[in-house]
Length: 258
Image (tube, rainbow, N blue to C red; front, top):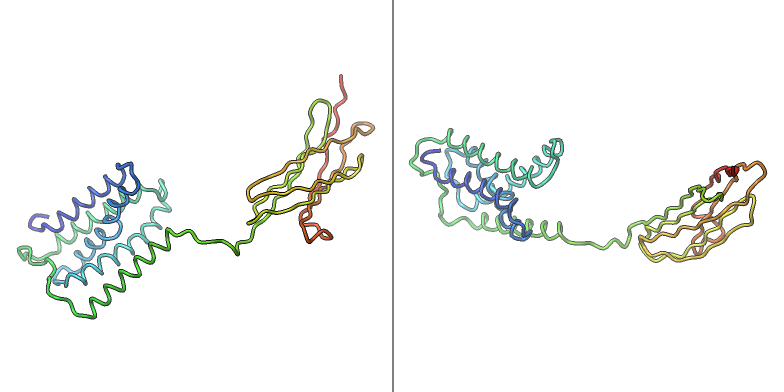
């Protein structure tokens, strides 16, 4: 890239930003180094390789560089998704630095001998260009803010798990019935467990989102130690006449002591 100082600078900056973004342990500082590599340098290199005979006005060059960099990120995500390492920081650093270096090399080969006069013109841009650049900046900032904003999930639909698991320990058999709440709010439950060899068992409890409750129900030995059928029904407040969840199973056969 002899005689093309801007291309040499872009290639060196891409390599430096990639290394520092991976090496710096402070996340905020790492993002500072990653930003030029993600949002400017690949686009600048690609635009330089395409517009080899045009002297772009600086605001236009900046806008094209940012837009092309964003397009590179979108296409790069598809490439990394099928790469062996997947979508991770190392993959992004290698991909963006490689794209920048390859595009700069292509730009250097295609550029005519102009003694460095390809560099963008710094004449005053037109008002329409300024307005377009300002609108692009506003949209980019808004997109970044929304990407990192935590939005409420008031209308998200939660769910509740109900499961049954047989157990046998110490010569006794029975089942464990578990209830796990992934609802959005504190929820009241009524659990009804029925065994053929015993009366119904009822439990009422409250679970916060993410909490669980496990009920252990022992069965009464049957002649011959045959398995016993168990059913569990879960109800929620306001729906006492209609089961919310239902599971059934069998207790393990009782072992005859030797």
